[in-house]
Image (cartoon, rainbow, N blue to C red):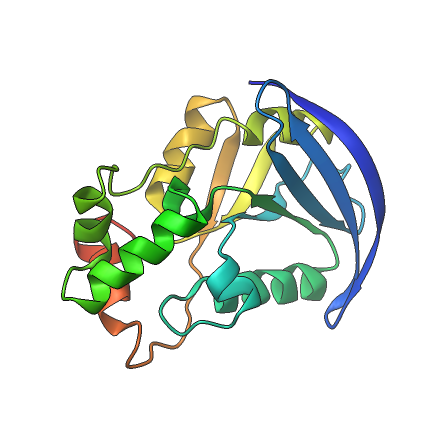
Length: 194
């Protein structure tokens, strides 16, 4: 999988001034972004969050998931460290797309859990892929990550691509009545860390 670097610009946020970098997948035209802060050129393992797009959680503040709080916590951690990277991958709804995610929400409203809903729609429980991370990390010449994640699949995927992950930093967010079941399913059915 290859990407084309498109452009970079400053991105002031409530946590600090990041730089946003745009990338386009060659062949699909799918767009991804990376947010960097500080000097990422050092050989020391870089604090990093690989975050899959979640319009409902990241932008519309849905309480059905923990995506928005995880992204915010990661940005805050990078800012506190003064150096780091957020990869924001365009693979909404664990890779099924926004409209299918809304269909999955409707099935969840009728009693299915998040995994069951994806399967009922004909998808894998988690269709996300992480191959796109490698060419983006290569663009920045990053070889080693301190990865902020609860998902062991990300660690496995990066390791298989030759990226060193010497440290895994779980991201803990507060559960609420709307996402308690969702969080339990991520641990029980998808193998996420608590």
